[in-house]
Image (cartoon, rainbow, N blue to C red; front, side):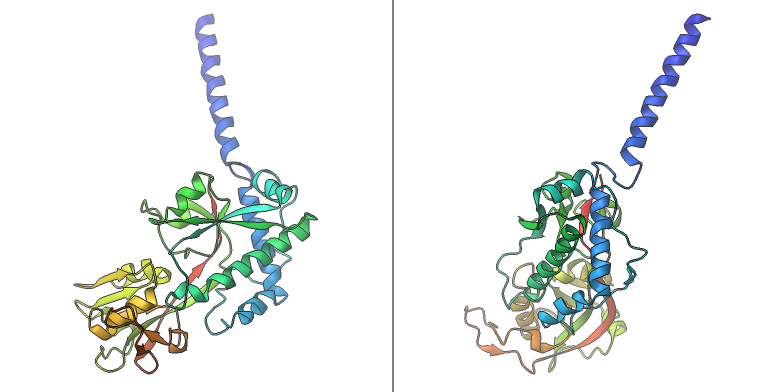
Length: 318
């Protein structure tokens, strides 16, 4: 009888230890390791206040992106309900103490006027820094500097978070996408408020291109060929995957590669967040000789897909 009781006590004690260990991994807002969810909450609190006080619009307008960036409004400018976390711990505390945060960005090579990202990169950096300044000021800490970590192809962004190579990702991945392992980003990472969002456009050659008037025309076009850049990669592959349709993503210099494809008939359309041809490079290389000889003005036209992609900041989930 005594042996049975002792055995039962051992089982109960083991179960209790397992339950405590499991609770320790998931309980509270700090997650594991501590402070990651606090970092998300602090960034959200800073974002909401920057939005409420007009700083977000100031940054967007400073980089002349007023016609480019949309406010998704999944976090309203209501500071009363979006509070900074008390008693920073773990990741958030370390960032405040060290005055440094490791921020991961995908490295797609040279960022110039041939790349759509050219119009987002500096603005995104300024936005992130403005939020870090607000976080530091709230907690009475010294300035927080970004330590930029370039993530090379094949862009294993989630792995960089999980392996603690970065504390967070910059404004590089839209909320709707997936990881390289095929998991939803929403479930594979923690994420903040949507901080930048863009409309998506279908761009075509004005003379000789498809006569599509709206997204239904594009979706119903069998065997259509689409070109996209890294800012429209997954969206293009998932929306424009109807019967016979194919898409090709140009991760480097996407404008400089996709626009010539429209002229040369190697693609029917380009999916891109730029709303007007004034954002395109003035000249492009169409014949592949390395010389930009063809002016882009007046060659292309577009329609709005009424699809909007939004991007948060990302933090590891565990």
